[in-house]
Length: 495
Image 1: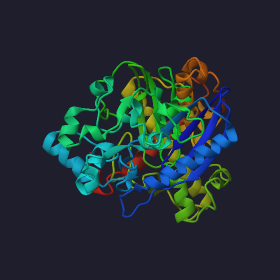
Image 2 (image 1 turned 90 degrees about the vertical axis):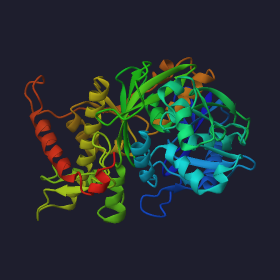
Image 3 (image 1 turned 180 degrees about the vertical axis):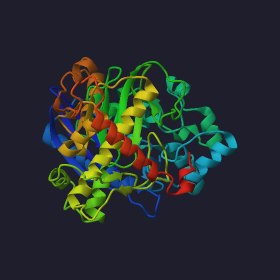
Image 4 (image 1 turned 45 degrees about the vertical axis):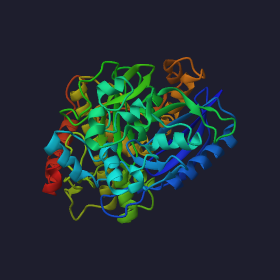
């Protein structure tokens, strides 16, 4: 028994077949980078995405054989509108990183007290309706990327999203989510016709057939990519956490079924999320966000020419024992949790005539690791949960210098995910539970074990004493962050 998973990320999409022993076969990937016509604008081509989804899904099935179900996981909050009569997008989709609605977010807060973030769906959809006539048509249908993929695979017979995706759109609140409904208050304020929105369904459950695929297997799970990764790494008990380091970075922790007071940003810059839903029960968690992670390494490769490729950063950084006092703050487009300072900028401190390429590369990896530790500390303060061990996936998880730096900065054991495609596993587990491939999530996630564990290095002779080198390093880091913040005051003023 197997499950097909289609995973649409920010810069590419993949499909794979997951067997009932959690092995992955038929893995197929296609790059699909977004476009940026102007600074701050991030768009994607819905037609190109549709065609690529069908190609990778068919290729995975051809290599992996027939499946019992399909699971869909995708980047969240990216928004697309299409014509229900022929399934044609009416405009380019707006990516979650698109910042064109920053001004509208400020206006809504000052005039109505409604808090939206530009990376949410709410003001993206409002913008599309205001600026694209076809988006105001009674035939217009809207959704996030998971909704678009489900529509494509079902030949447009399915128009749905799940609770984990709906919760980060800005179009629902905790009360409406418990009823699997959108917030009428928000829809009325933004003048959004509810008929254009997808129905909200439980994460685990059949929503229709993937009739565009051989055998028309049931679509049995829709889930946000970060929540899928958390489930794929066994994050289904309170305090279980994972961090994904790809283009950006996300740290998610499972909290339980108690409903949070609100879905707004919490005091230390994290956000309540729905990890998944089953029936009428919502399983909640918390998410901390790093705006740039691996993109800092890509900057070294593509823009500075310091490295031939991202993979070589590990070898180059390992050629020196330390960064020799160089500190890098990875804030190329601002800083997320806990600061949420859009005016912060990348900062390099401690450079001397003796600073080499290797020192610079190591400083970049260590800076990303310190930001990971920031996310962990903020998560623990906001949730009151203690994260004893942190599971890590994503492309950077295979970088040994980075993994050790993260363990040292956080003071926690870092468990490297055996398969970098934890997101694929999570969506497969959720769809498989819905269709009997596994009896429960506990059974499915018991198949997952880390590849290796990276322990933090300690300078304290007594393990009960504070790690003095870690404390010193973190103090220097916080000073560097202070200097990086507020570089563009008008952007830093954005909440």
